[in-house]
Each structure stands twice: as C-alpha cells, then as structure tokens.
Length: 68
Image 1 (cartoon, rainbow, N blue to C red):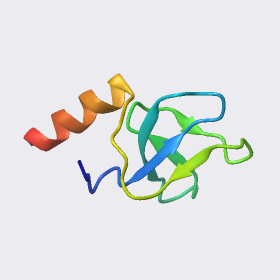
Image 2 (image 1 turned 135 degrees about the vertical axis):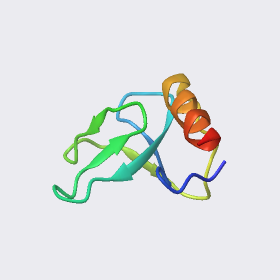
Image 3 (image 1 turned 180 degrees about the horizontal axis):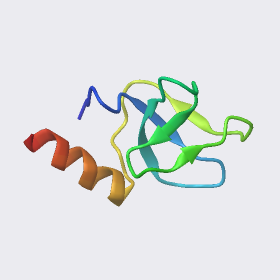
Image 4 (image 1 turned 45 degrees about the vertical axis):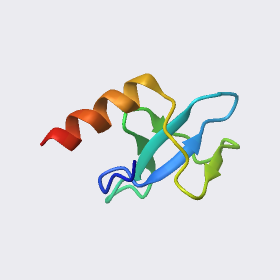
C-alpha cells in the first residue's frame, strides 16, 4: 500500500519488521509512522519497490490515514 505521508520503507538495524517512514522537513532526519526517530548513524536497511509494511503500529497508522 503506497502512502504519500509515509512513502519510504525501512528495516531498522537489528529489527525484523518493515516500517513506513517519512523525511522530517526541518531536521532532515527520518521518522517511522509508529513515531520512532531513525538514527542516521545506524546501519538501517532502506528498502525499494514498496514492500509490505509488517510493523503492527505502522499498519494501524497507515489504515487510519487511509480513512481520512
């Protein structure tokens, strides 16, 4: 499901779930839909081709935004 508010997909360092994320406009950092600030220094896995989100909290946020 492509979401314009959270178009990026990332698997955080040491994690298994795929999160939806977006770039923060002022700081230039990134944040997941489940409100986790992504450490730019960590070895996160940025994913291409819009894989399905597997983080339960991110899925809830994406579903809530789709209803709006």
